[in-house]
Image 1 (cartoon, rainbow over the protein chains, first blue to last red):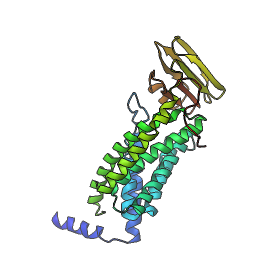
Image 2 (image 1 turned 90 degrees about the horizontal axis):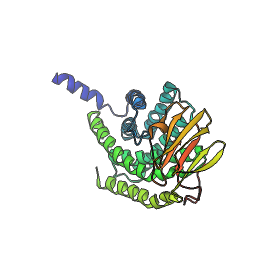
Image 3 (image 1 turned 90 degrees about the vertical axis):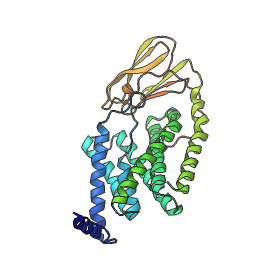
Image 4 (image 1 turned 60 degrees about the horizontal axis):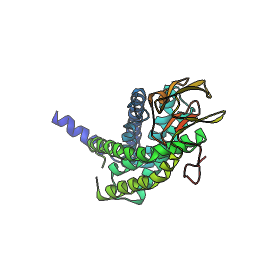
Length: 181
Length: 119
């Protein structure tokens, strides 16, 4: 058992190998899709049915921490496309909202990693989650042709920050097992 | 969580709190309910119990006003997020049915305190 673990350890420290990057990125994308599909079936709370934990973002931040934007972008955007295809919401308003949220979250998390190098996976996740929610509200307001829905945005962003930090902690636990910072 | 993480999170939280008053400025006309659909806007009283049928993009949205609260009782949409939002009564509260392009808002049709709309 000990030797197997040592071998696994050795295999994981082959940093920089393109095949390792592709393999781990694909595994993260697959994980994100499954989590996204499971979350899509959970009805949510009665007073806030749109509330989601956003656990799929854990896969995105792990990809970002391990390999940067090159891996995080396919995981994030690929996940939205696959989940949209699987749930039949491709190119529907909900899909446009999800894509806008994913793009904004990805952009802001990447910017945070580059511009403030002392931030960690927890901070990226929290702020990315907030950006995701904020972008969704703006797109929803645009689709509805009315800005009144923005009333709900501030409190939702605060909730998203907390949930995002929780997801970030989970991502950090997984990342530590992957020998990724 | 590093120090930088905490600072960034506090900054975002502060931003959200800073725009809160702007968002809540929509609370004018607290005794009214504004129902916006693809066909236009209808302003009704929240004090009068009534049932309104709104034509949405995908079908009919049934809005019920009862005991000073408003809810979407029925809607022809796939996710029923609007129905599951339940009844709202606080000024500025919103029920949205995105597939049907219908929003129900407690408050009049006055400006909602925002300068611009992102399209």
